Image (cartoon, rainbow, N blue to C red; front, side, top):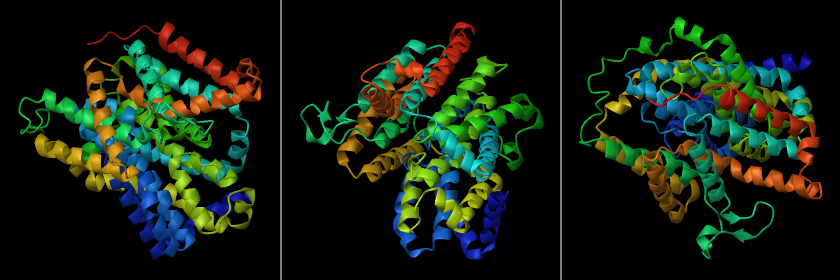
Length: 504
């Protein structure tokens, strides 16, 4: 009880005009970086890292927390409006949100994304405040074999969620895993699959693949679909003026989604966030797949499911709260953003560990409060004030819109790596993804294979090396067996028991 009261005392720090101003500035920066493809919250905090040298620790951490929350939410903006996720965690939102956008219901889709983000962010922050000591102990129960089985579970769920293209989804996933093997071996300092070139020794960076797979391929796809690239999209030419109340989800839609769906997605997101390295992408995908499995209308998924948007956005924002747990308790970042926040802590002389909460809780508590306030107030406020401008993105002429996106995307891929070669790779992957899309291969699974592949390989090899190469360790470890059984359950209910939805 004393722990919770001391954490809640951190809210008084936000009453300071200076600290409040840094929180709002951080939220706006995170919204911009999260919405622009290639500019993520990770990059935002990394670019602002030198500024933290001149800031007190409380404003610096408050600013980082608000960037984290807003960056996670803002990825849904371009994912919905132009089918280009601003962040990897918004990939599932792009599937459902853009489908609604093409039906002229983009404002409604953005409203559901914001509502889910708000609920998930609030639940995640509250769970962080209440359960940090307990959650830290639970995360230690997941050993190396369990981590492998968890990632395998995520990949299987992602593939089987492509109900009408499981075979193609498997191929795309394996292709992503193969691309991820290029560069330095995950266990030994040996270059592999670099084809004798020094430029590939560093491997393939995630940002060019994300930008190529979504931004560049979408530009090529839209250019092929549009007969006149100088015109405005036919789906938006005759849209009625967008009113701010159009962004408010109706009570009927919220009831159809169900309170339990929001709560379950928030819990999934939080506890996946607690697992080191899992991140918002895995939280969104697992929650999305679980919502599809339990949905009364699974046929709507892929065609504009509000339930799918709610599940994915609730989970990825709830993950923000969970990701702070391993970082604060053990110095193990829960995702890339908290890895940068860890640097901010160290710069300011704060050493992660159990004693941090005992001796310097007054410095950490405002960061928790910033997470909660960013989700509870700033997300709905931002949508209400700027929502109509978000939707108007698609009223820009396609030639101008996609030309600007192409420039920003390529510049973003360069800024993320400072490598012209990686920038060229964004073009290569964009062309590859374009042809995959033409053959109905789900490019989402390619990217997920790339993101999760290195960890899958690392934990597999590490678990085998620790057990003399005996694969039975994955069945004898309780945590690993739990996730393997969970994988079998999902496969049964989503593939064997539920008939495939016919294509339209």
